[in-house]
Image (cartoon, rainbow, N blue to C red; front, side, top):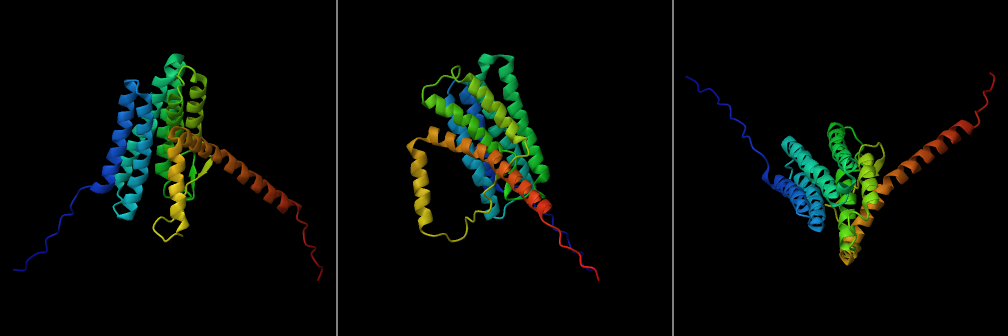
Length: 259
């Protein structure tokens, strides 16, 4: 009697290494909410930036170790919703927008809802989108703008009530940019595994020194510059397209010779 081949059951599980970083990013976002509830706004803003760093690491670790999975992608999106959607909205609301009443929490909700829409659109277009650009402001960078405002203002002794109009405008604008069609450079073409010139290490050291000189100011300024780069880049593309169309329309047609 011949032995029938037994089908080996595929082991089910998750990859631990990248999901550890995702869990740490989720913890940082949740801690930001808890810190804001205790009026520790500087710690809350710093926690959101820590979540940004961890969120950037988990995806690269998954790609470098070939541990990408559908579970990891979904878990990362849920973590992003908490760390870069709910957490910044609640932090800025508790810090400045609470004094505006209903208008304040509606602005915070607009930001949180825009984050959810941004993540949903990204997940549905990830296979077809141009890898060189993001469509809309990435939610970690939008969170950096909002949290950077809180960190910068707190570090310089500015109260939330003092900058309430600015906080309201920045929250609405950041949410609007996330769901817009404005393109942002993704920096995904940077090769981190290949060899680079020795001077590149010196540049990295100088960047660390520059950020360390005044982290609240530098990080907030860099976040705002990146948020503004999208509209500027889009305007450049529009002008180039219009110039190309005008050049094509004004080009003289070649005469057709009679045979």
